[in-house]
Each structure stands twice: as C-alpha cells, then as structure tokens.
Image (cartoon, rainbow, N blue to C red; front, side):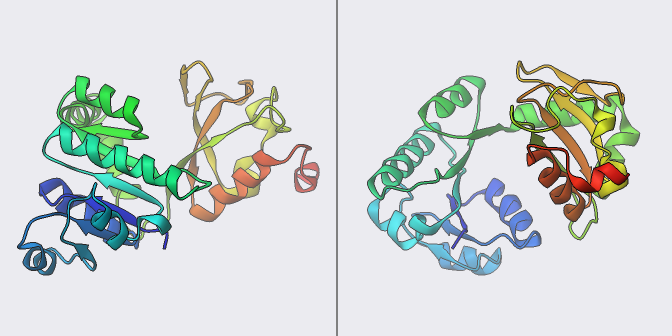
Length: 243
C-alpha cells in the first residue's frame, strides 16, 4: 500500500530505486524482460513483476490500485505514453478519489511537453537536470555543497518543502515576520513563489505574503509540519499571540 510502481529497468531505475530504498519508500519494479529475477537480486529490488507495465497483468500484479503513484522510466517515449495512458484510464475505471502521482523521464523538450499533456504530473529530462546542476555548481559551489551535505543525504535532520498559502489562510496579505516560524518551529522561509510563477529568493521580513503563493521552507521535518499547520489556520494561532 502507498507504494510506487517503477516501470522499466535501466540505469535510471537503479539510481531511483536506490534513493527510494534509502528513504524507506516502498516500490515494485515492472519490466517485461525475462531475466528480471536475476536483475532484481543484483539491484535489491524487493518486489518485481515480469510484464509490460501498461497491460492488465502489469497493472494488477503490481497492485496499482493501492499505489501512491507511478514512475515510468522507459528508453523511448512511446512506452512512457502507453504506461501513463493506461494508469490514467485505470484510475477512472476503479473510481479512485485521489489521482496517482505520475513521474516520467523524457529525452527532449518536445517529449516532456507531450507527456505532461497526456497526464504525467512531473517529467524529468536528463539534459535539463545536468544543466541546472552545472549552473548551480558554477554560480554557487558553496551552496551546492551545502545542499549535497544537508538535503540530499539520508538521515539528515534538515528538509525543504513548499507550503501553499490559501486565500483563507490568516497569513494572506500579512508580512513574513508575522508568521514567527523561527520562534515557533525553527523553520526559515528561503523563498516565495507567487501565483504568477515569479520567485522571490530570501524574502525580507516585511515582504507581503500574497494569496495562493507558495512558501519554500527549510527546517526539520517536524518543524515544517508545524509551520504548515500554522499556515492552514484561518485565524491567528493562540501560540503566536504570546511570542
């Protein structure tokens, strides 16, 4: 339950499943190749299904009905299209209330656009990721090392998440300093993404929080959960009245 169905075995799959394992996220690998059992033992796949991911056999044996989502990492866009289409159709067929989170890989911008239109929630292109990483290293090598050390490693006490500020949140149209996240939850707002997509890095305390903007938070997992709870409230929380 609440696992990820990872489609197709390749170098991407090896790295993705390694991260899933380290973060204790359950998964099953689905691939039609006959030597999947040997591959599963070699790369420590706890569960696997030897079938085409888009077929009824692949869907049923991977227990997609109770999965959190699907990660499809095919070497060609046609297989990813078939897998995404099948998952979305199955979702409707079983009357699932919460949509699957579907993540896919793509070789080009054109393929990325196509997969997003067909129902993928997130599409990752290796070239774009590499360009972003190199840019980060070139611009701020110290920051890249910091992120590598604290955010990308397992067992780290730090986490980074986005939290949406709804129209009904008490924080809407308030200044950032009114949130007092540092005092209450030891959490820092390191960025704001406005509804129109504009990003404000390291906002000052007097920056106004606009409705439906997203706050980029950094802190411990518990601290971020506490901050999100504060954001969801419609009226100023009692604990903030005495800080």
